[in-house]
Image (cartoon, rainbow, N blue to C red; front, top):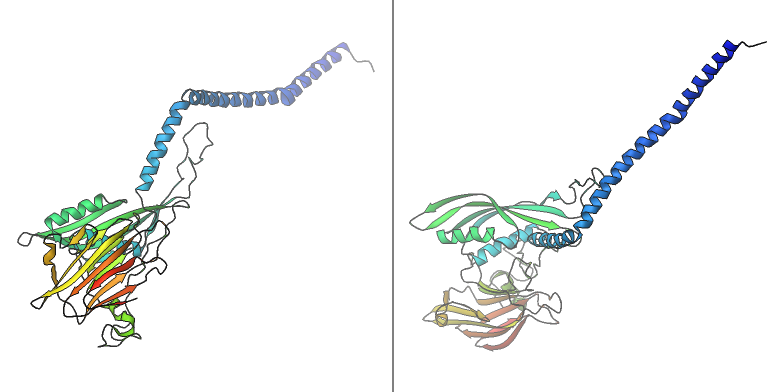
Length: 382
């Protein structure tokens, strides 16, 4: 069969169109897609290059700023305690009463709640992966709410507000109510205080050291140790642990603790007006004297340079002893070789009663309470 010139030309045209179509569908489109991808990669690399050049030019500034920011970050974190618990809150309340002349008649304790998780902020850096976090952290923020009913003089009320606002760890006063009696100069009302903490693997919360704090008895009318009417010297003076006139508490001088290393106070002094404290991490001289004049009993005591009464020390402070004269020593186990809190005690009893002293929870290997000398009728139980 002979193909005409016209048919040959037509075949050439069809073949050319087929070649062009194949080139477009199997070549040009792929090259175009590859080119677009390359253009996108070039654009991203240009952005990355510009960012790196800027970072390189400002490397020293970024390095210096990082040091400053890390330092500021650490300072902010240190303003938050490492955790809270109801025991911790109770000691915080006790600290308010011990250090301020304020009576906290009621306290409502709430559970500690997790209110913030660190490391959830997304990056805005154009060179970072979209939606990625700025950093990772196991830190978590906690909040504890206390509702306190208070009573204080006007000046002491201002001291209370100032103390909470400038507390060593982050606290806020969320709300407050108050009423003022001008005749008695007494402010009373309620405070809602929030305490904040940040905890993590490098900021573990060890709760509080409550060694030596008495927890009472299930039945106030009977005991396996002693019965009603027994005198103090029965069963190693254990009755003193629930019925004493004055006490001294000794524990490690820890700045993260809510209580002082050494506290001396009469039992039932809710305002702490007769208490003396010491934060010193060292062995100190402790002096205690009970004396009687014309049937009236007085006490005077000192730790290092702290003493009560602060003025006219020799006149003492009048008190009414119970059925027997007693002094309680609430010691605690040492926390390590750096824990140096201790006292050398001089005990003087110039009364017509026997002074009974009970030493509880003492560190047997390295006692905190060492009796240097006694005078008068003194019995010590360990």
